[in-house]
Amino acid sequence: AVPAATVSLPEVLRFVWPVMLTFLASTVQGLIDSAFVGRCGGSVQLAALAPGTSWLDSLSYLLSFISIGTLNVLATAKDAESRERLLSRSVMVAWCVGAVAAVPCMIWAPYLVALCGARGPVVPFAASYVKIRALGLPLDSLFRVCNA
Image (cartoon, rainbow, N blue to C red; front, side, top):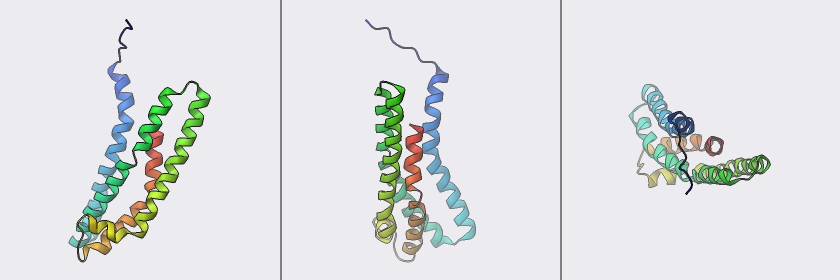
């Protein structure tokens, strides 16, 4: 029988800390956006954050398959050279997939926020928010892969 590996709490925390920061980042971003828009805009602009945030956070979590796959592939790599090659490929895939995902968000933003419940005067503000935040999707995917 193979003895069970023991893992200490500091080892677990060292692994979990970056993952926790990744998921907390979108929450903190939403909090900062809400505070800024609430302070500088009106109620319509503040209402526009909800459908835009809902759409982009869902898309961001959907794209997390890249980082999960990267982690699995790197864990099974045999040597440092193959790990480096696999990581560089994952970084490139993350960047490209993020960029490809950003394009429909830029083009169809009004329709996407309408799918999330935006109506009337909220739609143009929500669409603008989606377009601005969609520019960061390649970096979001890249950040998740680098944390893997």
